[in-house]
Image (cartoon, rainbow, N blue to C red; front, side, top):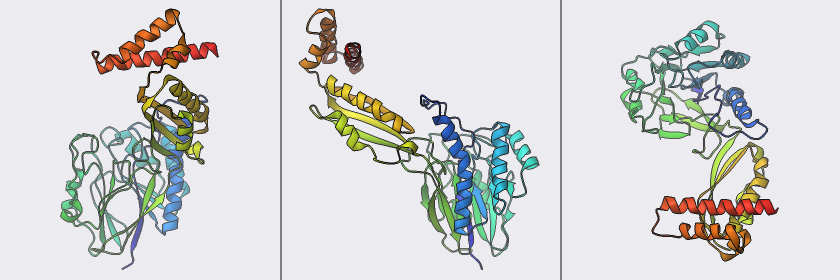
Length: 377
């Protein structure tokens, strides 16, 4: 018996436009992120060859929507055709499910090159003398469906490893109610269950794995995307699973806690990575307490460094203001502006007001300080 080797990936979401993400001033970020998703196909092909595998299993949501543009579809198929030493197995997922994306799957069936195999039926597929692929296509987007139930009775060729391919939640990742049993590998006698839906890498059990997206798309998983290089020695044998990094961009978050009197700009600089900034999307959350002058210095430092990153975001909602007389004097020592500043400070520190009212006053005071500072140069 020869070991069966393959690549497990999922959730490419080809065609994602990232409209919820503020673009860079040169309007280049969204385009770079979209292109990186397409380029992941080439990186998966490289991973397959390095692993000595012929088959690439994509566990759903290959496309971001049921109606990708003709260019997105045809370019994806062409990219897979370019790697014709590999066989690409495409499973319908939530975003490209069979019901909503029926024209899409019809087009793939009609136009796909020979080495691209859409899996639109829950029926076993022979992968040669070593393994049987047991696909569970998502028929429609539902809050609580478990397409893997079919695996329990799905047959396989005698003497071959049983490889399940499915899309959905083992745990309730997104409050959808979806629940693939975590022991589905045992109830369906699987040697490996390749799952998609969760965009981060997750091992449910020795035989049940989420590969995550090969190119990350959110501030959650805090690492570059990977695919899984899987080796199944034979029926009943434990699979060997190895991660191969495939992601171009790193989406990550950092916490910046400040104390009054601290050099906020220096604290931010110490937090930032020295290299690789162009391919880094970084969200920094400032917290603690800082004076208005320190907050302004922090904002200035953030504005200076932001263009070095693919994307940079500084949030200050959790950063409380240390109210200093010098800050109010910087606004004005007398007159209408000083009266306004004194009133806002009083409201920001008034325990009789709601937290929301105090936050509004605090934000207004910071804004007043910034405007006066900007006008005075």
